[in-house]
Length: 417
Image (cartoon, rainbow, N blue to C red; front, side):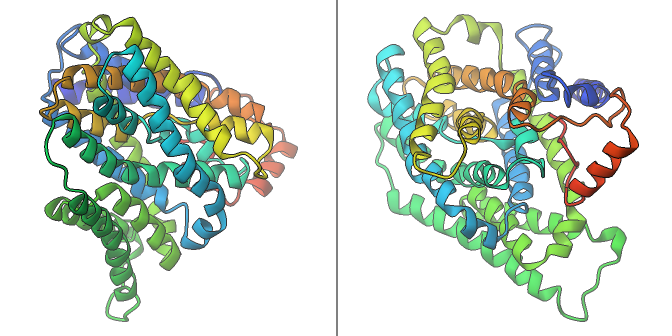
């Protein structure tokens, strides 16, 4: 019950401060991370969780966020924005893996298989910590679509590399065909399950009352999650693809689900952040070498920006849009899940790998979740002022906002965090 009490208290504080967070560098995500670190065994010892519990909560949070974010991008939108997203995935992602692996090997002193494993773990990005960029309708569409599709697909695409590199680092035989089969099965489930259910819903015998309609996509998500874990299909690729498939076939269901789904993903995110923060103990921080700290800084400040800027050369993105795309590569729940996989594996330097990954994720959350508002201003987008505690709008501004933001979905101008 101590965990429930802590979560309720921090949730109440975060909701109460969310209006201020939407206008400043304050981040509700950071509040949960810090609360977890303070309540964890490294400080007050109020919350003490097993690694399995943390891994499962992070897994559920990642799946929920990917399923919800997938609904923002239909198949048509994927086709239209594939040139930019494809560059980020096919050029930027490999460059990030290599760019992280090199300093890990030379600065942290780890062997090459383990170095590339860390590169694969830190390659995925997470849009929920840059939600003012991804979730606002007045941010350039091509930038939002680029970040959303990249982060939605690179989580699932990184998993095969993580599994193969864990086997290589542990000096075990790899099974690339099995890993490829899991990737293909996740893609199949992500298309087939929402496809079959969407067409079934068109039959006259099926009709949901409006009050229960948001639970339809939730039921699809639960079925998909269970099917993937029972068959070892890639759940993260399946989640994003399923959301996109549902957005293509049944826009009504997606529209009904959006407010509920966004709140659900926020709750999952906050819970996972709280328990992850409990793993960030003083020992993990002090035991890291200067080389490991240098790797964490390079991964955030140099590797990701350089890789994306190179992959976005000769595109139509403006310099400011390229800067935003290069900077907003936050490390999130995919890296948490994959880092815990490495920690629970038989690789020789499992503790060192997780410590380096955990500190990089924590540093990324601090930096990216507190710089979304400044970057929005750089893109000439104002944070919302019509929230409690903000200045009152004039009638003229209210009319402009109503005309310019009628297409927003989810939580509106900004998610909590």
